[in-house]
Amino acid sequence: MKKIFPVLAILLLFSCKKSFEELNTDPNNPVTADVKLVLTAAEDNILSEYSRIEESYDYMSGTFIRAFAGTYSFYDQWNEITNRESDWDKLYNGLLDAKDVIKRGTEQELWHHVAVAKILSAHTLGYMTDIYGDIPYSEALQGPLVPAPRTDTQQTIYVTIFTLLEESIVDLERTPVKPLGAEDFVYGGNVQKWKGLAFLMLARYHNHLSIKDPITSAHAALIYVENGLAAGFTSSNLDFVYPYKNSGRDNPWSGFYSQNPWILASYDFMNLLETSNDPRKENYWTKALTDGAYRGKDNSSPTSGNLIQTYSRLGGYFDKKDAPMHLATYAELRFIEAEAAFRSSDLPRAADACNLGIIASIDKVSAWYTGTVTGNDLAQYVQKIADYKQNNAQETAQTITLEKIMTQKYIAMFPMNVESWVDVRRHNYQYPGYHRIPHDDNDVPVATSFVWRGLYPQNEVSTNPNIPQTTLYQKLWWNE
Image (cartoon, rainbow, N blue to C red):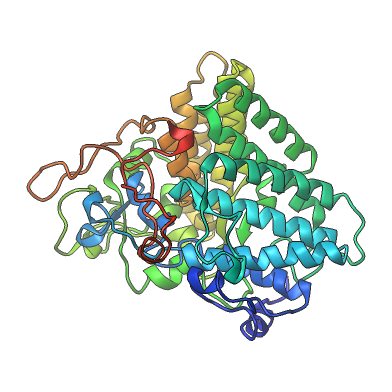
């Protein structure tokens, strides 16, 4: 893939990075530019945002689900969470770019560009509504006509997501005036890969409705899984990622956390990997600097001291400067299939899909570690992979359980933490079984409830009277 850095440099000339308030009141934003360049801007604005800064909900939710622990109690103790700005503004910048591509691309019959913009919009809306619930959309990004847009209900946002994805599939099957090309730095203009991703997204968001409508949601998810597989989404090579390799930019996990190593391994997550001899451990975490051990920190005390030296930090596969940022994966598709099949009482299919998801996850990340060791160490690690697959990826209709499916998905989804947090919330913090409310330094629980949603950014609460007042402990529509 060609470097995208020169293209992104050009985009800085016209792709404004404004606050949501400015976006919604500036009639000249975005300025008119070639649809191809605006699509690149949309991909970059949206996909580069995940986990970029410490205020990101991909980071905070990692502590909610006990995959991460923070240094100096950073987000470990939920009473510290306030109305931070998080990803809101840049994601709305991306939605504005996508809206422009959809409008002008439709006028110019650039159907494949339109389809990609719709998929990006659906993914962004899904990410945001699964954090905040009700969000502005139908009235948003209309300039001075609607300076304070009302929020759409989460139920309405989900209908919008489904509509955008279904429309994108139709658009991908049309013949455009000009084909999609290198301006698409995610899939390099490969329309079939985008089609497979649209089906994966449909499976994901229908599966999210497991509480609202267990039977229908499972049935729909399985249909879209089948469509995704038929469209060719059959390996990790099609994973939806921000491809930092050859991009001229560093993966934000590496770039930010190597300088401010606030991410530590959670004790519970590390213990889960250690006790099962999971080969993904070496690809997820570094060894502690003090003694070379893999060690996780409890999400309560201690909150001070030489934590960075004592505990494992993010490392291996996900800490490389050119590591891709994962947004949706083939392994996830298989685990969606496993859960939906289990809810549909198709236990053989659930077992087979779970096995395939485990194998896909391990094979995806373990290539990094095998490239760092040689000789006997390499032989031992290869055997470790084989043993884990033999012990954990041989489920049958008689042995498969929902707990096994969701625990294995939880491991495989690292560090796609917001999506994993959706799973944890949908199952009422049951899987893995170690979820609990953290304690402060005096061993007192910091809350009486788990965290069920994020807080709207403070500037939105202050400037838009239609933004509702919420707390961390209110459930979202699909979780009620």
